[in-house]
Image 1 (spheres, helix red, strand yellow):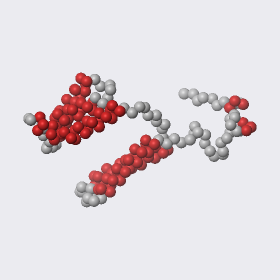
Image 2 (cartoon, rainbow, N blue to C red):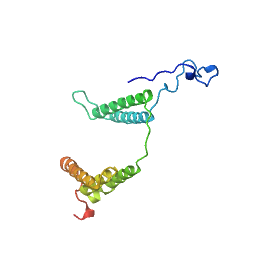
Image 3 (cartoon, helix red, strand yellow):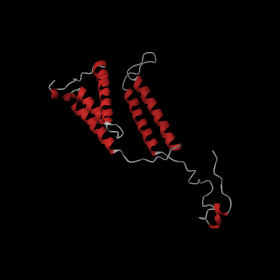
Image 4 (tube, rainbow, N blue to C red):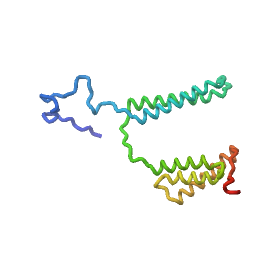
Length: 185
């Protein structure tokens, strides 16, 4: 990889200051050298720090135990502290070595379908049952992507429904009806 040559001669002088001198003061940086800050990194890191600190504060209300016999507050304390440290690292990275990120258009279809799917699941799981609610929710979230075909979305929804039923209802034995009273089954 070759670096571009630096121009020398009368055309390389800045015409903004009289006499062809640069308008930069000693010790100032040109705009190309100015540090960039990444607002999304700083914001995300701040959220991580906030959630981590909340977990640490919440865990202090429980017994921490000893290193050999950990109490119920030890794991949330460790997770919260780890999350806060990682969030701080993300904030520092965003302040020091941020990147210029250009955002494209907001995918409103995906946002709307995912919000509708989550609300649908929350409001209907007890009355419609776990299996049909999971199937509709998985179908809606899969169709949020414009690149997914209907047959693929149905196959993914069927697979996720079977997997989630096996994990949550059979494996973890959650007391959620498979088929709800709205279906009359």
